[in-house]
Every structure is written in structure tokens, then in C-alpha cells.
Amino acid sequence: MLDIKFLREKPEELKRLLERKGVLAKLVDDFLAHDALWRDLTKTIDDLRATLNRLSKAGADESARAEAKTVKEKIKQAEAELVKVAGERDRVLEHLPNAPF
Image 1 (cartoon, rainbow, N blue to C red):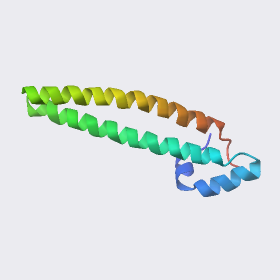
Image 2 (image 1 turned 90 degrees about the vertical axis):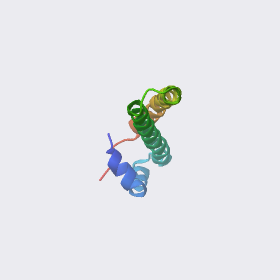
Image 3 (image 1 turned 45 degrees about the vertical axis):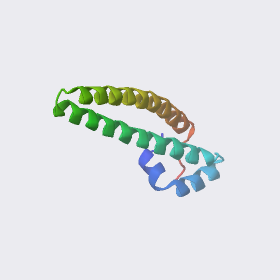
Image 4 (image 1 turned 60 degrees about the vertical axis):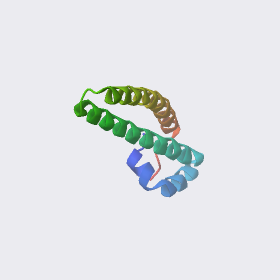
């Protein structure tokens, strides 16, 4: 399996190597698109969790509880989307052969 760091840092070199092997270089672009979305969702979830932690430390007033409930729902939705995106990203990665060096 290819190293994700290599895919992110040197996509053009990898495309060139895969074309020599007869593999569609479009798979690299597909992976990078799914990976970018996965990274964005991961950051969003981390930010939402930080907000939830801040709200839980702020106190137990009614507005903080209502906002915490909203944030929890957003986290749940983002996590569900993250599972889908991670599955697609992994599926594309599985179809990428090792690069010939």
C-alpha cells in the first residue's frame, strides 16, 4: 500500500510512475479529493468538540445547554459523514498499486 504522506507531497511524481505501470493517474486525484474532505471534516469535528468542551466548562445555564445540544448534533452528523468519506478514501487507496521505483 502506498504511503499517504507520499501521495500528498508528491502527487505528480506518483502519477508519472503509475502511468508507466499502466494505472489510471486519475485515482491519485480521486484520493486527494477524498483526503482533503476527510481532513476538513476531521478538523471540523475537532473544532466542534473544543466548542462543546468550552460550553461544558462555561456553566449550566439554559442557553449553554441549548447550544451544547446543537453542537452535539453537528458532531454526530459530521462523524457520520466522516465515516463515509473515510470509506471512499480507503477504497480508492486500495485500488492504487505500489509505485515502481
